[in-house]
Figure 1: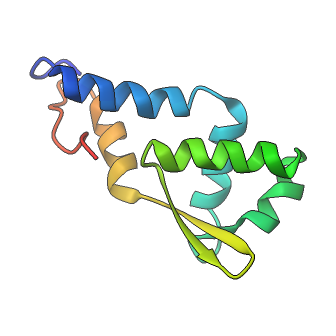
Figure 2: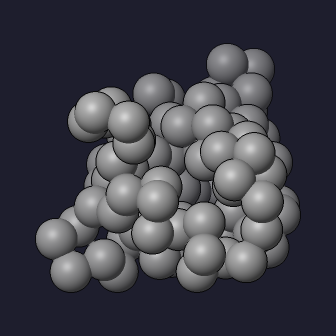
Length: 106
């Protein structure tokens, strides 16, 4: 973030994403989905893996989707999630020394 100064819109988008990652359960869910063998994971598999109630896991996943970090696809009764690679890459770049804020906006 030491490149050009952020606009208000860029700062808002960036803060929203980092706010979504400020919870250990959400970081863990994101990690589980990012490392899933097929690059996606069913909510039905995440619930027991995280050891939290279905409603809690659904809330955390909704926050990650709302921040643009995950895509959601409904298949029958369950939702499947996959990481949005460009969004994560933009966050990663925003933390690099001398980084410009290119690719931060959703």
